[in-house]
Image (cartoon, rainbow, N blue to C red):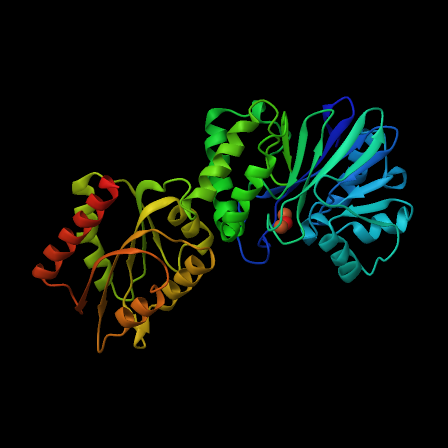
Length: 406
Ligand code: FEO
């Protein structure tokens, strides 16, 4: 397997990871994920970010370095934009094979190198504006971009070639195959990767949207020609596309961009009574012509629920009472909404109870800090009556009208 050449002196080392293991141990990746590292050659050679040894990727890494005319043993600098193990798992191996390669990262990154890997020598701390001269007019410039996606992160800019090595930033789920550049994919394939980038963002970046906004401001003046993330497509034809996509995503929960005029319906039902009430709500939404996505929990993994819920202006949360409280899978979803700062939504909650209620009370306590606009919720005992169904349809219409008017 060969490295992909980006310019005369820059190569992408690319691995597609297909695994049943979850990303971060939480998020399923049925479509795989890519790990991109980069070689930049001047008189000296820098390797930017590493990879995780999933599915034999270290063997592919060696082969691709060779095809780029280098090897672990010939690297002069290892630039670590981020210390999460999906980008550092080969670090011990590299240091064993090449102790002279200097490791370059932010002060917090260097502290993690010492802590995670017990490597204490030949380290260089860099801050925003610091540079690394590789010779032959090739200079790497560093920009601290904290919390994209953990506190130590930075991005690296190759001024000669206009390439921004952004690590997790501007990344996506989804294995790419042999094609890795944006101009090599069809519109249909881009639509697929757009949803995978949204899911990636909602799962692992959304908590840090205010930091994404700051990074976009900080990087906005750079003459970027290529965006080269460590997960997903390399954008050489239209880098503005992924930048505007990230600006939109960051705006969904910070208010700098509007959510989409659609509703995400999340529901769970024990014996079908809550589901029966939900059908009446959906009739109301359909009558108003507002598009919606729908996910049953726990059947649908939270990763996919988060993606659709994150972008939607409206939510319907349908759950029965369970043991005097919310249906536990919905409580988990609400916990994630809180962690990911899903603010500013317009929401309708509904559900049945059998013996005694309790979901409503717990729900209202739970969302008190969410900054949501709530349509008055509807609860009923057991099977919904015709009056309940009529009310539920009207509440569905009310929510849909709020979304349309917004
Ligand atoms: Fe791709 Fe935050 O690691």
